[in-house]
Image (tube, rainbow, N blue to C red; front, side, top):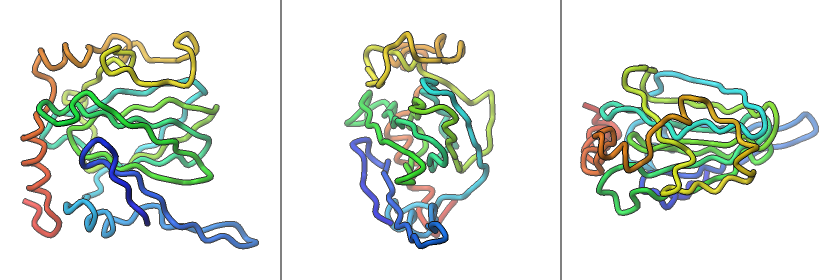
Amino acid sequence: MDFRELQVPGAFEIVSTQFADNRGAFMEWFRADHLEVVTGRTFRLAQGNLSVSKKGVVRGIHFADLPPSQAKFISCVAGAVLDFTVDIRVGSPTFGEWESVHLDSESRKGVFIPEGVGHAFVALTDDAVVSYVVTAVFNAEREHAINPMDPDIALDFPFPSEELLISPKDQDAPSLRQAESDGLLPTYQDALDFYASMTAGRER
């Protein structure tokens, strides 16, 4: 596995080696031990999710209260998506910035997103299936969203806005500035302290 840190500190793009022959292909798409070596922290799998989306569907920008929030390992197992990692940690050197990674069922790349960081994607194909393995179970009372059309974040979608399909919940979500003003966002220092508590082999 090859890991590339994104411009959002603590987030990584992961490229796994695929072994192909006349039967098809095989790959290790997730290795907790490799992830722990690179990130220096544990990844305790607590829940796995799949979403199926039509072309143009936008999901996110989603995040959960820290602690415990959710670290996520994202991959696209059918079709293709443009995946966004958004730094919403107040005080981070890249607060409000983002990076996108093209995920699809051919390259079979993955993205690791640490706790306290926002996540979104737009489906580039019909029947785009995204897999999420996460470190904490879903808790609706601790889940939040930021409007994916927030002009201050300015996610670069590959389709005109009128072709995007966004849920009412995400459309009605606050902007990054409003979420900060409302005290919904984690701080960078709180995130760093939480990551330290998840140090590989020393989870507290």
